[in-house]
Image (cartoon, rainbow, N blue to C red; front, side, top):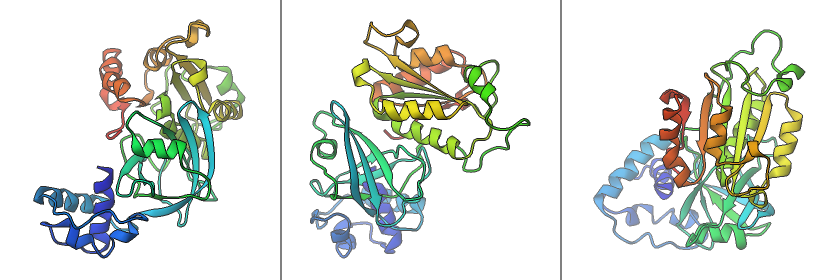
Length: 317
């Protein structure tokens, strides 16, 4: 699907109409898709051409990809890298969206990653990557990519985690007060705008971006961010999370450790279990994490009485 997203934008941008062969249609622009040739001359089934055409209709106009220079690399934990990239042209994304990513070492292979930040004045984008078994792209991003290397980012796509672009009006009395921190985020009955964010592993990335979105324009909503990890050693990005927690009285960050008996009892358990302890009626619940976590999430949350329209899971992950 990540590759189809890029092909859809190429199809629309270059007015490609042939449905029987992607190879002949994309040959003139294929060298610009990734730094190395990727064999566009291979015939592809007609149904893929139809899917590409549908993707083109969804993607709209704009560049098919953005060359992006790696300007920062941090090995945040075992097998996890935080990459900061600067696209040559500003990437028009919203927090909670996903973007296809291609590395020169594996041309033509695009994988989904969610920016971990809200849009910044300098245009940089932060990506959180875990090296997964047999994951050639993720392995390269974590272990091989270095500053000054060039990546390619595809068109941003909504996956069901984004908030409305225009925030709701703040309630009377001001958006951000010290009393909001004194009461736990979500204390009492929540408003429809309050958020319960539940992250597992690098699923933290899009949810941290949502926190930054609220921080950029505080509007009275309260946010509880549950950050799941196996042990304390597996909890990455802790310094950034602590800074956010300290800076914003409407935010509460709660770690959840599924396999660490030495942490406080309130922090023991998987992310969903700890999240249910912090849920209050009216909160919008956004969940992102490993596939096994997502497979269980909707059933567990609805069984706990959370309305289906208040549960937001990524459509692709």
